[in-house]
Image 1 (cartoon, rainbow, N blue to C red):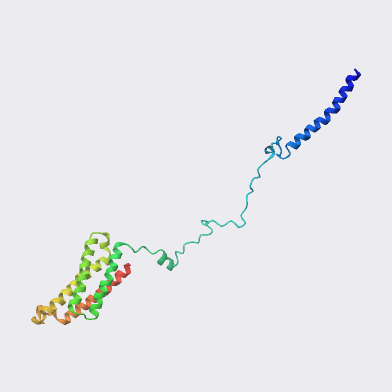
Image 2 (image 1 turned 90 degrees about the vertical axis):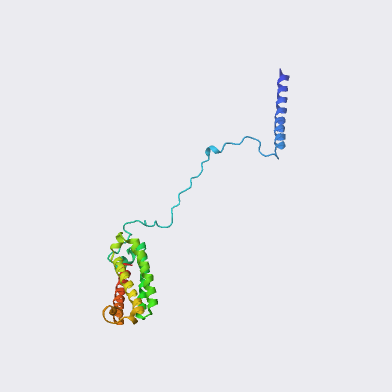
Length: 212
């Protein structure tokens, strides 16, 4: 029995250095291969940081539709009423009567300059043909009740009559006496008719410009 315990003591003394030696060899074996053990789970204690809301450094602008910021319409200002609130003048009727202004001004200048009968008659002819188309276009429509329409129609007849008178006077006056029927071709009578026509043209132009 005494020998048995002595043997156990010897074995235990030999076993401890051997175990330490084996662990040292294993450590030396895996020294250049990194850690080969099990890593702890660190995700359980990890929480992503929430982005903090950044406040703007500038002050909040006022709303565009703020009732306190909108200025009242200056309806008592004549400039605003005449320019900003002026009615649309691009209607076909107004565009048409605007074209007559230039025609009438040329007839007026022709009378002022005492142009020859042929040139005067050609200007009147151009005006009356356009007036005929204008009448067909708007006759029976609301525009036909406008003053500008009536003035153009009256002037169309008057200008055509005077143009015919001047043309006939140049053709027939040498053969007619200045009494009776021949008086209408008298130069004084023709000049008087031209003055009436010129006044009527001037009035019509004023009406057309007022409409625009």
